[in-house]
Image (cartoon, rainbow, N blue to C red):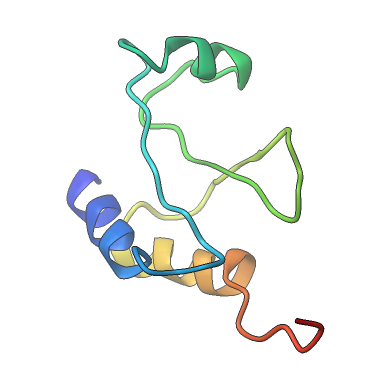
Length: 82
């Protein structure tokens, strides 16, 4: 899954609406992982529209599935209010 995740991060590196990140729960990210109840690895959480609790991603772990989820759920395609 790591290659697909890294490719997704590269795909959205310049995005103003999507941030793809990873956290090492065994090192400096341990407190963050505890805060969001991450118990298994890899765990994918996503946050939409200021939701500070996050949601668990349950889809496929290949690039196409991950990208489809981002396009359908996270990516802001056009915001006419701005």
